[in-house]
Structure formats: C-alpha cells, structure tokens
Image (cartoon, rainbow, N blue to C red; front, side, top):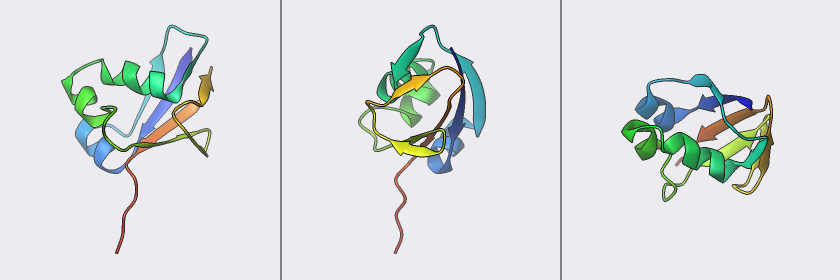
Length: 85
C-alpha cells in the first residue's frame, strides 16, 4: 500500500526529512506495525522511531493510538509529545 508519512519536530530533525511516500507490502497494518517497519529501515530511522520513545501519531489529521489500522493512501504523521512551560 502507498502511504504519505510526515515527520515533525525532533523526529524530522533526526531523519532530515519532513515527508516521504512509502510503499508497504500489506493491505492494512497498525500504526505500531508501521512504526516498527519504518524504524527497521536503517539506524537513523531506528533511533528516531524506536518503540520505547514516546511518539504520537495522527492518521488523516486525526490523533490515533498505536493499534489504529492504517489503510491505502492514508497520511500518517509522527511527532514527539509537545511540552511547554
């Protein structure tokens, strides 16, 4: 399936990109499975998207949990939790 992946804040800085289109060999998969698949590509992705790091996700502009099922032509965004003071 074809997906548009967007990265924000420190994740974008680590990956040196803000957006990419990827082809995943699956009809559907969860956000967590997608994150693991992307993290397995190389060391930089592995560090930015590692599963023990707090990362939020949105699919088609809706905040979702890791168990949310992603389908063809979705836009998936990954970003660290926002903090402020």
